[in-house]
Length: 208
Ligand SMILES: Nc1ncnc2c1ncn2[C@@H]1O[C@H](COP(=O)(O)OP(=O)(O)OP(=O)(O)O)[C@@H](O)[C@H]1O
Ligand SMILES: O=P(O)(O)OC[C@H]1O[C@H](OP(=O)(O)OP(=O)(O)O)[C@H](O)[C@@H]1O
Image (cartoon, rainbow, N blue to C red; front, side, top):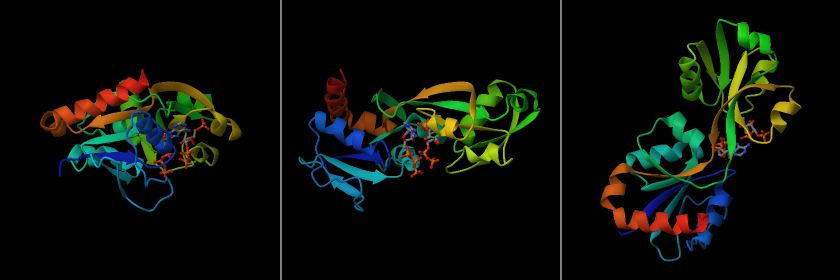
């Protein structure tokens, strides 16, 4: 089969990804975000799209199950996957923050307990600062942890700041900016070079 396989992250960025691909003349006629189907083909049958959980996209691409992936930088960094991160797609913009309810606890505690969906990113951040931490891995509603004494602070994504504000948390530190990226399997980048480059330039042209 001569097609490229693209792993697309389900969730809040999926529709923007599909819209961007459509602008680049890549259409998936049978795609709907709520569909239970896992595989979709573009109308020219050149791209096979697998529709998977965001956190799994780097794994699909690293293993070569997919040649390309569209996923947030948060999941790419957390996975530590050995892939090429080739293009900022300019949506899904947000940033990592350290937040909590009590700044003194944050500054004075010798070994912080950090609740997060991103333990690797949290550990790396505090390691660079020479601070010891213990992480508690959560899969959502992370803002709750400091409110109920489960953790001293959180490391999480902030976009509008509404979730922090509505729960009485404040930002203590801002880490990296995050956006949705196009990632590529290293072997595919070499062996399917022409097709990958054609796709990259189609997308680059509409990003401007
Ligand atoms: N509040 C936000 N604003 C903008 N982008 C966000 C926000 N939260 C997450 N993102 C980006 O969108 C991606 C997908 O987020 P989403 O919440 O849909 O996925 P998820 O956390 O994997 O979902 P699930 O709750 O199903 O596990 C994230 O990996 C991140 O890059
Ligand atoms: O700054 P804001 O615009 O409020 O966005 C930030 C929130 O969005 C994400 O959560 P998500 O909506 O994925 O829910 P979750 O708690 O289930 O992870 C993130 O983990 C924050 O909780």
